[in-house]
Length: 207
View 1: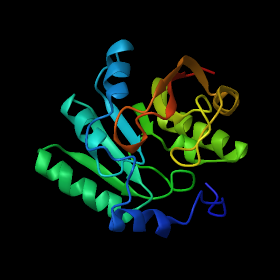
View 2 (view 1 turned 90 degrees about the vertical axis):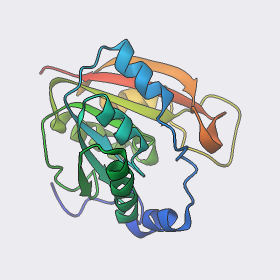
View 3 (view 1 turned 30 degrees about the vertical axis):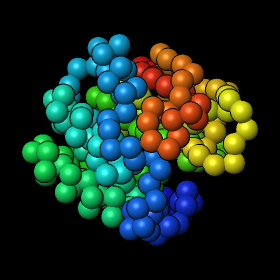
View 4 (view 1 turned 120 degrees about the horizontal axis):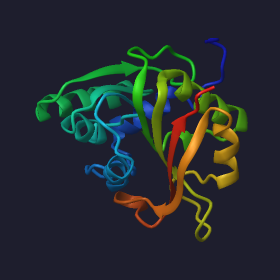
């Protein structure tokens, strides 16, 4: 893919947040929506990719369920922290530092792709569409994608996760995915427990 594509934010600023401990999205507990989605859709363990793994909490949970994990993050310090946690947990993962929109991700094809609050970082419609197309490229036929996305529902707020409308999400994922779920909910834990969110689940379309 072209190396001149615009990066979402300065990678150094993301990395510095892991140095400073400014991680309001990191509750230290596996996301409750993730387990519910796995059970509800009968997603069997297989090769999986977590985009924006952070410190590795959800990575560890997925590995313990039997998924063969490849994990990516833009921030080297996030990957360093994830490696420490994964090693202490006694599970195995393949780690990759890079920009999801630009860099080649090793290990494809995957049966399951997961991101908790990465899709919603991108403001521009073309970046959101590119994100979805990248997920589709990496998935095996019929593969599943689950994302937790900040929602425009709820009262106005000046802080917290970015907010995306249902229309934005649907526009971005077509024509690559069949949407199985777009359910309104809240973020589960941590500093954003009352912020509205979407539980998004989709299957790669067979073209």
